[in-house]
Image 1 (spheres, rainbow, N blue to C red):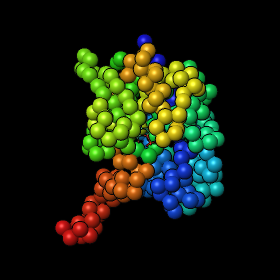
Image 2: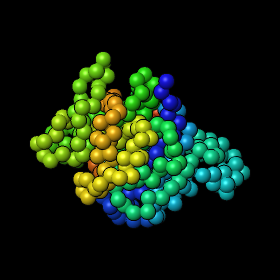
Image 3: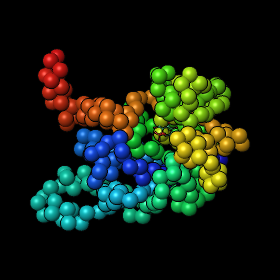
Length: 290
Ligand code: G1P
């Protein structure tokens, strides 16, 4: 029997230097794709997959994220007084229930592996989901829901992957795979391989289901690529004693940590909106002279 995935970790301590000056006073996770912050899109993906507890690993200056997932009493009251029920519903739909969120701090920027390790006490001894908020997974089925289904079928650790061009493999964690009864078993993992050395072009896309034993490994993990404590390095150690599967996401992934990815996400999510899409398309066509 596999244990149900109830908790998800969201590392949100990063400084967002690639997005300055926008992220000087605003956490990068609060930048909006259409009308909701990036972090809201990712939390919604987790909720759609049945996650019940949302663990944010934050840092200095990230208070807006905490406020975003809390009740804003004066705002609710004012909207209610003005009869703005639609807006109230939007706010309510975005709000986790009381007690469903936890916030802990990564006190120093030591890497993704270290950020995940900071959540160890809140996660405890159960398998958990990890979602990197920069990466928006846009498709018919939410990515994490598909991964949790797969976990129910075969258990183990699961990493979502997508194909990237050869020229980009050095920017990601890359996996090698082999077919195992119709599932993609991971045979190799490497964080940011040097150009020309990647085992495939399947990149880790920022969605994981991990066994809690990863925390003991992270506790002693040495610094890897970029001088940071890398999650991928800890996964390589865990893979020596536990199965790892790749889950190919059927959709498009936008890296909102880059300017181009962020702008493309706004276009894709905007066009997909029933209320905004048609009018947006007309304007885009005009702009492009189509
Ligand atoms: C992290 C992971 C990497 C993964 C990437 C996806 O890297 O370490 O394996 O492919 O996220 O965005 P980062 O983007 O933090 O350098």
